[in-house]
Length: 283
Image 1 (cartoon, rainbow, N blue to C red):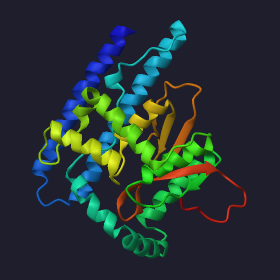
Image 2 (image 1 turned 90 degrees about the horizontal axis):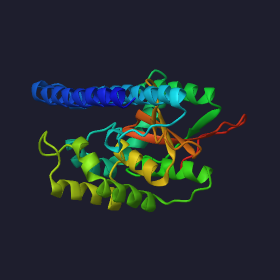
Image 3 (image 1 turned 135 degrees about the horizontal axis):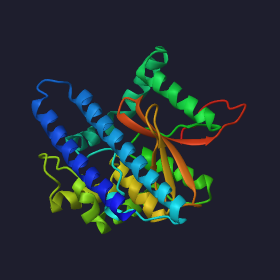
Image 4 (image 1 turned 120 degrees about the vertical axis):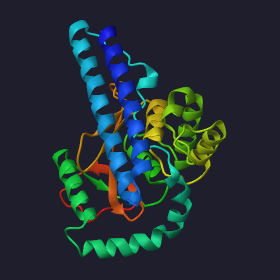
């Protein structure tokens, strides 16, 4: 088992390095290519790799459990699943937040009239996935706190009370305490190098004290701190499950959207489906 695990982890490290080099090369050779489209391609590549790595590790654990009746522990530093790399897009977050309400209202009205819009097609696909689980969408307000509000809502459904502020502090404290395991996934906003110590400190401060968008790093931090399983559903691809080792603990199911609002990525909550629901709530 140990030899198999080390072989897989060695390959994962090499694949992460290869993907990082590929992303750097894509950025350098993109020319006038639409930056938003390029970032979407990069995010999808990262998501695909994370899902594949997670599936391989879970399969190895399952196989070993069947043979020995035990649940092996994956080295902590290899259990950090990351969907979004920190990039120059972080600088645009403040401005996006200022325009959020106006753009959101305009976009929703325009896209509701277009049944084939990216938003409607994505939402329809996610709703089908939720319906198969007897769940429905619980709409979260679109701002930098959407991930934290989605997790706050899911925690309330299982009797765990947290605030957005407390969840942000939990995430920031975990990231600071586990810097050595996480920093390798955090790219400087000024270059393609890893974050400097000052940038890392600033990042943690933004997580804790501002409305900075949440990412898979924060999902990992909250999952491990509260010992809960967090499952992120998307319109396509494999769900990203964080904290699968916490058997018997609550499972929080949230949805990840690329086109729900005009601000880019967005997280919504989920709830048990009702046969006579009137409309989606806004939390």
